[in-house]
Length: 320
Image 1 (tube, rainbow, N blue to C red):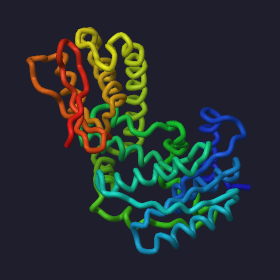
Image 2 (cartoon, helix red, strand yellow; image 1 turned 135 degrees about the horizontal axis):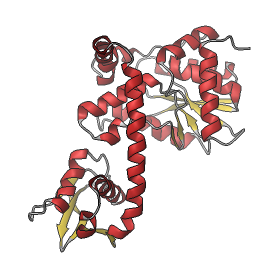
Image 3 (cartoon, rainbow, N blue to C red; image 1 turned 120 degrees about the vertical axis):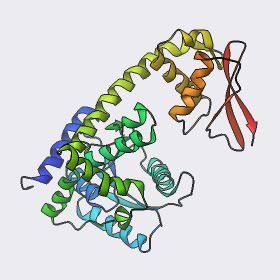
Image 4 (cartoon, one colour; image 1 turned 90 degrees about the vertical axis):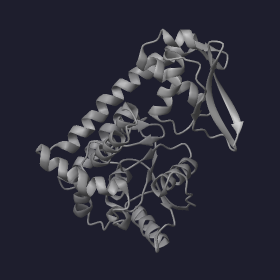
């Protein structure tokens, strides 16, 4: 039986999440790096339901195969019904952190089958995400942070501090892997964790991480409402594959921006920034005959532009 303390807190958080978001009795997968957060989550998950551990070997550090194999053995010892090591090749697009994340999520999505995937993100990770969004000026959607449930991704520990997962490993006698990249100040998130958040806690008198997490929740609730209104408005603003500028102009600003964002994504836009979306919005609200707006896209060998003509917004692609 678990001793009261950190393990019990994690088990309570996981149970509450599962009761609210997932079907009763179904199995799940857990993304296991071997670090304290994911290892503690794996321990409580394996006791609750049939659990498959998915261990991604990014191959970015010497000895990564050994780290992955150790995590695999730990998962089986904790009661997982299966544990798989999945090697991936990390690209370069977006920088090392973004490229590793893209490779990891793609591998997890392929390996999970029909199972939801538990991720070990904590309240501290959420606070860091809010600060990153704030510093980049990416708008409220970026500052809204990570969703607790964004199928198939499940984040049951977003209300739990990182210190609790470390304590849970200690209670269970587990030795987690401590990723040396988490101490490398070349990475922005590491400096936020080691320098910025402690300074904010000191200057503002504590409770900053929790306040940032609450901010994420409030912003997420607002953006989800706006997205629902945009979903209702989109058919009335659509003219085939184009958007009717007059219909857009009649919408409230936040709803109009959400309609434009959805239209851009449906048309192949990717990596959209708040600046890009607002530039397209000016084709509606400040039309002076200006040229098209370049949009990031996933169209290989093509550049994507949003343009206005004959009262309609259209997407045009051009060879790079």
